[in-house]
Structure formats: C-alpha cells, structure tokens
Length: 539
Image (cartoon, rainbow, N blue to C red; front, side, top):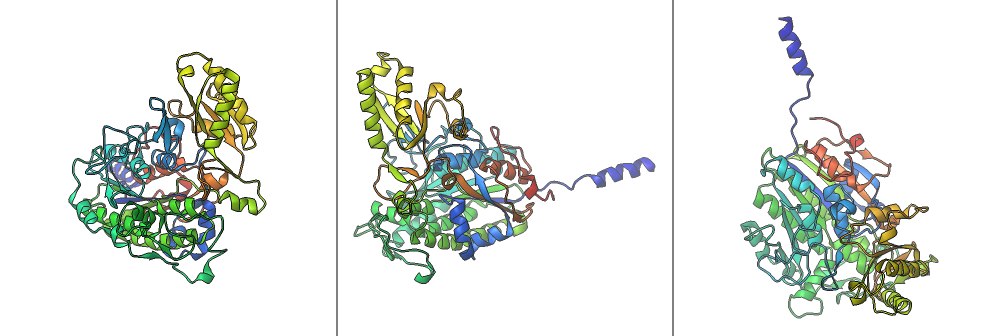
C-alpha cells in the first residue's frame, strides 16, 4: 500500500499533460518601429490597442544586425537567427553572373502559379538557409499542423511560411493573391473563391479618406517634402485609380499604398482560416499575416505624416477583425496564442530632418557608385563596375575577373575612399571584416548581417540621419540606428503573462518564445531564447 501511495504522489506531482494552443496568430507590421507605435498608442482603441494592453508588451526590441530591411527582418522573426546564419541579408542581392541585382528569394525553377513571373523576382525559400518556426511545427507534428502565411509582399510571406507551409502574396500586375509552384500545384478552392471577389478592383472608385476629424491629426497634411506618389496626390483625400480609367497595375499599386490593403489581408486571412480549417483540432496550426501597407505609406509619406497616422488608426481596426476571426476559428481565446512584431522601423524624410536642424542628408547610391568607380579607374587604370546595395558595395568587371589587378588591393582602396566620404563612419573590405577593431560597436552589427556568398565585397557604415535612396522624395530604412532597428514585440493568449516589459530584447527571441508556447523544439539555427519572464508556465 505504501508503494502504491508513493507512486500516486509522484504522478500527482508531475505537470498536467501539455497541450499546445490550437492556433498561433503570428502578426508582423512592416515598418512599425517602436517610436511610431508609442506615438500612436494613445489613439489605438481597437485590436492593436487591446493587444498592447492585454499582452506581454516589449516596446524596446532591437535587431542586432546592421541592415534593417524587410526580407532579413521577416527571416529573423521566422528563424530566431541573424542573417549571418539564415543568409537573407537584404531585399535584393547581387547576381555576379549577370551583374544585376535580383530579389533575395528569386528562384527561376519555381515560377508564380497561374501568372507571370517577372525576372529575378521572389518566388521560393530556396535561399533561406535556416529552419523556420513553420518548418519546425510541420516536422514536430509530422505534417499534421498547418501553416498559412499572407502578405502583400512575397519577401514577407515566404520566410513566414518557410519551406513547408503555404505562402500567398499580392500581385500588383493582376490584383490577385498568388503563390509559386514551390508551395502549390493548383490554387485551392478557398483562394479561388477569394480572388473571384476582386476586392482590389472594387476599391478602384474609392478614395482614401481620413478616419478621424482633421483636428485630431498632428502636423500638416501638405508637407513640401512629401512626393506626388502613385497618382494619389499629396493631401487627403487620396485617389486610388493610379491615373487609369479602369483597374490595372497602377491602381493596384495605389491600393497597396493605402490602408485599404489591410482590409484585403484580413479578408484573405479569414478565407484561409475557414478554407484550411485552421484551429479546428488539437494539432496546432499557424496563421501568419504581415501587413505591408504601413511600409508603403512610410516610404512615400514618412513616419510623421498624416497618412501614417491614419494608416495606424485603420490598422488598429483591421487587427481587431483579424484577432476576432482567429478567436472564432480556435474556439475561443483560451486556444489562441498571438505574437506581434515588426521587421524594421524607419527614418524620417531626410529633408524634413534637415529642416529641423539635424545633420541629415539623402545619400544617392548611384552617384556614390560613380564616384567610387572613377577613383578606382584613376588608381588602377582599369574599369571596375560598382554597385551599391544599401551598405554593401559589389565590385566587378573583366579586369577583376581575369586577375589583371589585385582584387584585395582594389577592395581595400574602395574602402579607403568610402571611409573618407562625408556620409560614412567607416568602410572595410570583406578581407578585414573579421579582424578589424570595433571601437563604436557598429562593426558587430555589420558582422551579424554578413553572409559571404551574398554580402558586399566592401561594406560601409553610414552616419546617423543619412538616408540611402536614389529617389529624390520619400524615405528609407536600413541602418543599425534605433529609428531603423527598434521594434515592438508582443505576446498574448494561452500561457502568456500580461504586462509591460521595459528591458531591451532581440527579435531573435520571438520564434523561440513561440516554440516554448507551442511545446516544441526551437528552429535549428535559432540564436534567441524564450522570454521566460512573460510565460506563465501553465499547462
């Protein structure tokens, strides 16, 4: 009897049977830096506002690599790793065979399903060198758990879907949601029905109006530094026709820059929840949604514009509808986990910064490349092709390929010239990247974002408030400074301890924390760790 009693006591002392949430909703908001969200928060009363109030909210997560861009940001959120492991260093990479820039997820062997595939465009995860949260779920559940990722951008949907989920993105040529032959051989019935609704076409005759009274918006609607973007005009209301007489690529582009794009994504997500039966059984599923409209507004109008203020208000509404749909699909809040973050923040329009007295400037990479090419021609007597992709400099040309000049000497000469330019803190040839001293701490960020097969022959660090853009209007992102790299992270739902957590964390922690909530192992190359302080440990 005593032995039986002891056995029972041991059994009762063990944790209850682990039960993962039926559905995980993984949300990314493109270009939603911490500053933007903190400024917007007092007016957020919908789904986004409620998520901040009821979840475990970290306002100060910060990417630890240098080039804060969409493709590496989403890859980092998905894998829990930095670019030096997952290999996605930027949105575009340099193809040495053609001498042209191509999108980082380009894969000619897997074209767009039932559509046109622009050369060098994103279509598959073949270049993603690390396992994702989606892949780990599929392996852990032996293929039973489902993953669907949706975005207006292929470079956001693909890493969130990984190699084994489904990725769908908006095609600005047709106004439809599309995928590639990597993910599907035929369009499922639920997506066929969704595309048949032609929601982007239905918005052709609409205008983007302010959601709130004009007195509630801060600053000026008509700022001289804002562009005349996509036929939308500089002030409200914004037309969405793109200058066309009937729906077409230009109107679809204007639509994608408007917050009406949020609503299309929510409708697509609802269709996916129903069509794939996500959250309907005890095998955990993932629905990943990346809102891209915020980034399009950011690039065109800047983070302080009325347009950005309004798109955040409308995102707040759309997120409420998305969360409600996810709760219904999962059978209630008790079966749902939500994670929210962003791929990067972003700089103000540099001319606006300069007007405010900051040492800001617009760095034209085309002009900088011309200056460097001339310097190398003068120094070595040969033609060297120069391509600047953000902070990476790619060198080429027949003289280098044939070994007529010392390639290391050329790279170091290029770095020396760049380091002297008024926009640069320092520059280094790839030969010196691993051994150079790091007095300002910025070199460590560059190293974490460097993947030898895809990064530059030379890298440089821009000074704060330098915005790299060959377009004379709008703004950009892609540096290690806080306005570009600082983003929010929020966890909510089953197993999460709500609260405001002010310590600075790294977005590489997002995938490991979700792995812990899903009661499974972390993605294979993950560098982050579960945020134990925000987890209840309840089963």
